[in-house]
Length: 296
Image 1 (cartoon, rainbow, N blue to C red):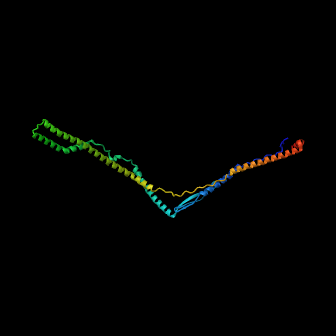
Image 2: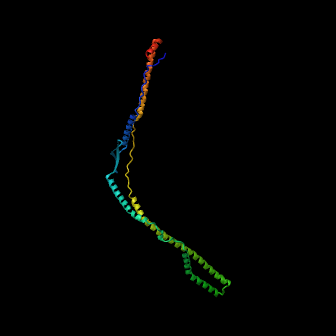
Image 3: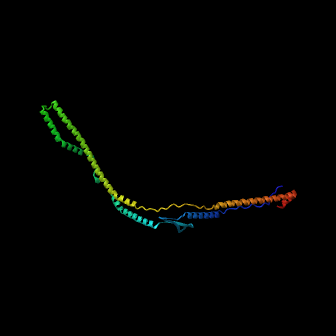
C-alpha cells in the first residue's frame, strides 16, 4: 500500500526580488558607468594654435558634478585673433555708420520722372531729316533739269514730243528714286537718334541707381568683413563603459536559488517517502496500517 505522505515537509517559500532596492542599485551602477564614460571622453587637447581643457564648474545637477570646456589660443594666435577682431570691429563700426546714409537714401522712392519721358520714334524728326536731305540736293536737281530741257530745245525737240517726254521721264524717275532714298535715309536717321536718346536716358538711370545703391553696397562690404570666426579643434575619440546588468543578475540568481530550493525539497520528499516505504515493507501490512495511524 502506498504512502499517504501526510508528514511531508512544507515546500520552501520562494525567494522574491526587492524591486525597489534592485532598481536603486541598478540606477547607481548606471550613473557610475555614465560618469566614467564622460571622464573617458573628456580628453584635453594642446596644439601649437591653442588648447581645449575640461574642468569642473563647481555645479551639480541631481548630485552629478558638471564639467565645462575652455578653449584658449596660444599667445601668438591670441595676438592675431585680437588684431583681427579689432579690424573686424572697425569694419562693423564703419558699416553701421553707413546705416544712416542707407536709411536716408531709401526713404525716398526712386523717381524715373527726373529723367523725363521715355524717348519715342518721332515722325516730326523723320520729316525734318527728309526735308533737310532734299533741301541740300534740290538746287542741283533743279539745275540738272533745266540743263536737260535746254539741251532738248537746242536739239530741236519740242515740248510734248515723244522724244522730249521720254527724256523728261528719265529725269523724273531719277528724282523719284532720290526721294525714296531720302525717305529711307530719314528713317535711319530717326532710328539712330532714337537709339542715342534711349542709351543716354538708360545711362543716366543706371548711374542714378548705382549712386543710390552705393551706400548699401559699401555697408554690406564692410559688414561682410566683420563676421566672427570660431576656433576649430580636432574631434576626440569616443568610448563608453557599460553598467553591469545588476537587475538581470538578481533575477537570474533568484531563479537559480528558487530552483535549487525546490530541488532540495523534492529530494527531501523523495527520501522521506522512500524511508517510510522501507519500514512498511519490513513490518508488513498490519504493522503498516498501525504505523500509519501512529503517525497521524
